[in-house]
Amino acid sequence: MALDTNTHLCVVPCSFAKSWETLIIALKEMNSKIITSIFIPEGVDFNHMHDYFFKKNFTIYPGKVADFNTFRVANIGEIDSTDMLAFLELFKEYLNNDKK
Image (cartoon, rainbow, N blue to C red; front, side, top):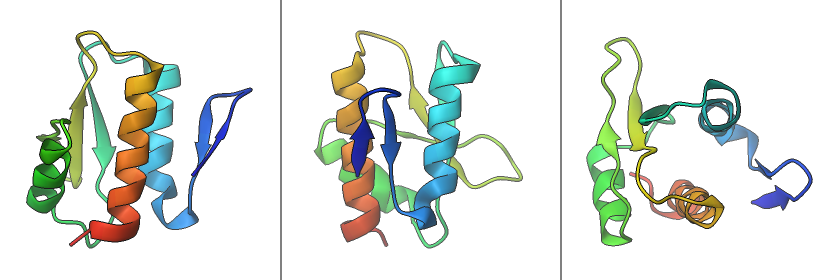
């Protein structure tokens, strides 16, 4: 993943573009103050991904939108760009290596 320092957007493989686009739109345009929903790519098991993230000190939550396979990320607390980039790196790492 590459970071465009002018726009703060991450460049990722096309196969994960929908999830990345959803996260970036939420962070830049929707300005969710509490929680952001992100599409789970096809073939990814939420429970496995949750446990993987939890072991690395990130907590994700199951999605609540009935017609869409999503997970949620809380946007509250002391979160800065370093935390967001660490989350994006971990998400990329998971999708590229450990998804089940």
